[in-house]
Image (cartoon, rainbow, N blue to C red; front, side):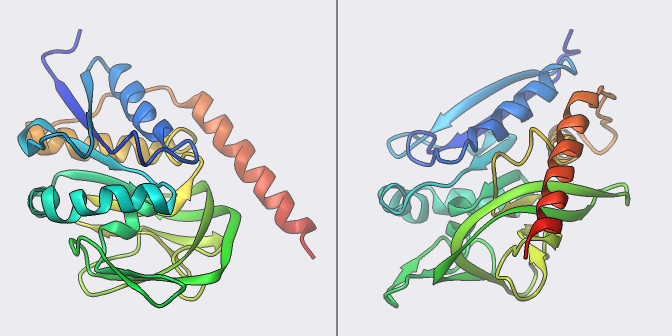
Length: 255
């Protein structure tokens, strides 16, 4: 029984931004909401599709190859961009990974020095470097209830992202490089928009993040009094613990 509760996940450009298993983030959101009796649906939104912000509770934008990102960038920036900006300012929940993360910023500077105009919804920019950050990663995240958890992830990006005013880091880097390998932070947060370089995918083995996004989306739709029902996370916690142990052992063996 769903008690009448509904949730709509908007998956942006799933036909183009579909690398690194990031669709698993959408599946994790769907699964953990469904197990709580919430009536969940997934809407695919690509280049030729209209966007109705009122029909979406959680938006997901993943990563892709440069060629695919070039195909969708004009649609994202010029066609759907104004509506996406309104959604972000209105507090709709977004999860944006790698290319999706970069595209929400002000610009992306390529290795050649060419500037790619991005959406400019959040105040940050990205500059490409010749070397890539390819690592298993561990982050520290403070959740909405004030508790702190370790997050297992994987990064693969040549871009270095630098946050501007009004944008906070998503997590603190414990192992890996994060946004730029310099400031010790990973990802970005603005209102209910969360961005990260972590592929792999991020949510299935980090249920605390999944539940945080679900909780925010349900409170946005049904009011702050909404409480997400408890859910057994023992399987996900075992996967996260195994991933963290593997990464820590690899770090110990590194020269």
